[in-house]
Image: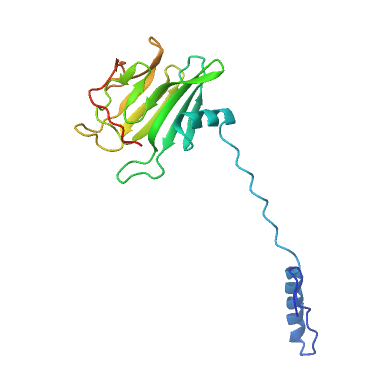
Length: 209
């Protein structure tokens, strides 16, 4: 006999000693419980994009299909919209602390109806004026990025190479908006004073291709 999803077998009626009556009552109660369906879970809400489609499109145009928008807003406290875009490393390498691990990152600023790139981190750290002071001369294959935001200073970024650069050592480079020159620059080792840029490096290699 086939039993439907919402039905249970009929309770058998059979003669027996007085004790069987209690057994039949319990069996009937069990059968009554079987006839009700378990509540169905509500469908999960569809995940909403974290950032507007415009920003996702801008990120893709700058760093490709794997680009990810991390931060957006008046990041430098200048009244202008900026966005931080990264290519995240899919897996954290061994012996590297967890966090935002990237191969490339870019800061973009909205200028009227268009976005322009104002900072780039790939093998090197650079802005429109050149390579940031204090950063490794040898190419870096990936960075661990930390960031903090303050009402007074705006966005502060901290870049740490995930591997020791050739001929150098692992050190964290602070980067922040310099209101005096109106661009992102690196900071000294105490993360206090801004450093200038170098227009070129003696040797530059591209190994993130």
